[in-house]
Structure formats: structure tokens, C-alpha cells
Amino acid sequence: MSEALVLMLSAAHPAADVRIVGKEGAALAGAGFRLRHLAPRLTGPAPPERLHGVALETFPAPRGWLGRLRGIPALARRAAALRPTVIHAHEPDSWLAALLAARHCGARVVLDVHEHYPSRLDPRLPAPLRPLARLALRLLCRSLAARADAVVVAKDGLAGDYGGAARCTPVRNYADPVAVIPRRHVPGPPVLLHLGALTASRGALLMPRLLADLPQARLRLVGRFTDASEAAFWSCASRLGVAARIEALGWMEREAALAVAAGCDIGLVLFQPGPENHRLALPHKLFDCMLAGLPVIVPDFATEVADVVREAGCGLAVDVADPGAIAAAVRALSDPVERARLGAQGRQAALGRFGWSAEAARLVRLYQRLTAPPVTVAPPAMLQPVRLPP
Image: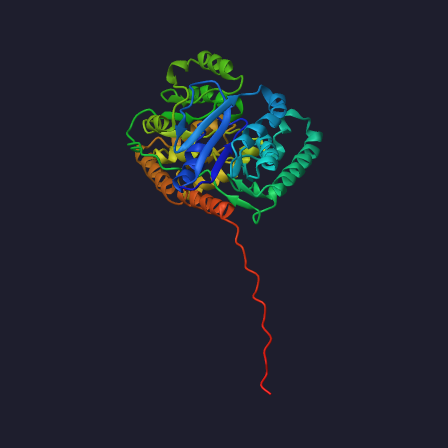
């Protein structure tokens, strides 16, 4: 067992986050590193003390962005007090905290880039100000990356803001295999599935209208509403007379969510156009649907998602801003034999080409380099004078 302590540091992600703990943490713990995840204490069930070989520790969650910014020094002090060998930080404010902590404890710092952060302020700013805000945030990202020891990117298209491919290590959010019996597709009205966070920008308000276009279809929701759209969702569902065909199952552990997925017919990924993060999305839900043997309907504008689906041959890329286009895609998948074919191709791709093992191995190699003892080179021996014969 390595004596190196790797501290996963989060300012917003939950203690049991799938990427941080279930994927990256589990991979490093399996390679012999000691892992701890320091994360905010969020609402919902309390996390276990240990998960996937990672010790979990929480702190009181600050309120809002202003609270998170004010909390950076305290987060840095908490991190430094644990005396980690490496701090692996997962959001811009935790990046700052990690760099501050490293000054006091000598840790190496890894920045983990989950999203396209230069565009995060776009929805809050008038269009004329967005290019200037993006430039400022891009310069900040480059400055922080230059001070870190390594940068990890969760998807393609992000490295340019952090020094390019030579500076960044891709550790993509590909499928982490979990034991699940895949769907056995049979004739009958389709059961549609939406996994993960529910928001208006992720298509939540389109789903009641979708069911209204598909009189016999049902919808299962596994996840929570994370914006203010829940009341509008149920109001629309009641007005259209489709509420009885919606099962809202709430948040579930991943294994339980996959078991629910394997009882459905078609997975929905409905990120709406506009945010740059939606164009570059590579969500866990896509690969979980593929593992469960479900064909998927995804946004045609989302570059990486659409490329995965086309390469794997596991679904349809459509205009997800149009409920009619989504309904037409559902009808195109009405044949259970076709759903089974696409679902099998998706599952094979999730277990192979888009599997997590190669990404995990790349992360472990990075950490082996970061924690390797420094190589000392002995000074060259002094040359002795050569006596020539008389």
C-alpha cells in the first residue's frame, strides 16, 4: 500500500460523486493509493464513511456562489491540515483552494476539468458581454493550469483552455461496468427513461408534451429536479393528462438506477441547445443506458454524445428542442427487434471502445509519475590524470 495520500477536493460535488469516487477514486485505490474525498455536506442521505476504497469526509456546505468564494481560504486550510501528497481538485474554486493549500503542505496539485468553464457565465450576461467574460475566464483557467502539476480533462474539446493536449491528460467519463442484466426487449408500449438531474435546460419541460404525442408511452424519472422547474413540470403533465403515466423514483444509488434502466425501453438524453457545456456534454447517463442495453435518443448538436451514438450504432441523434422530433424518434424505435439490436451494440461499445478501463489506467500512470521519488544523479567521477610512458 502506498503511503501517498491523494485528497480529492470538492467545493460543490457530493461526497459519493460517481466520477470522483466511483471512477477515479476507485481506480487509484485499486492501484494502492490512499484516498480521501473532502466534499460539502449536501441535503439527502448521509454518505457512508468509506466507498469504493475512498474515505469520505464532509464539511458544512456554503450557500450560493458568494458563499463558495468566501469559503475558499477555509477549504484550503482544511485540505492542508490533512497533509496530502496530491490534491486533486474538481471545480474552479476548489482549484484555487488546492493551490493555496499546496503552499502550506507541499502537495502536488491536479486540476480536474469537468465542464467548459469559460462559458459558465453566458446565461447570466447580456450577449455583448459574453465574449469578454469568456476571455477573462479563459485567461484565469490558463493561469491556474500553469501553476498546477497536472490537468485532467473529462471530455474532448476542453484542453485548449488549459495549455493544450501536451499539458492535459484525458480521463474521459466513459462507461464504468456495473453488473446488470440488460433489457430483454418485448412488444408493447415503450417505457422511456430519463436518468440524472432534471432541469428545464435538460429538457424536463418537454417530456410531458412528448408523452402527449405518444398516447401509450410511459416515462420513468430517476433523479431529482435541481432547478425551479418541478412545479411547472407537474402542472404541464396534469394539464395534458399524462401525469399518471410518469413514475418519479427520485435519486438512487447507481446500481439500483441501472436495475431500473434495464426495465425500460429507450433512454433519453435531452440537453437543450445554447450552453456550450451541452454541446460538449459526455454524461454518465448515456453510458448507463448503453450498459443496460437501451437504445438512446440524444441531441444532434451535442458533438461528443452524437459521435458516440453514431460510432456505437446505438440510437438516434435528433433535434431535442422539438418534442415532435423526439416523438418521431420513439416511433422509429417501436420495433422490439430493432431496439434489441441497437441496445446490444451500445452495450458492446460501453464494455469495449467506450469502457472506463483505459481511462483508469491513464489516470493511474499519471499518479505514478506524480508520486515517484525524485531521481538523484550521482556526480561524475573525477578523471584521474593519465601518465604516459617515458
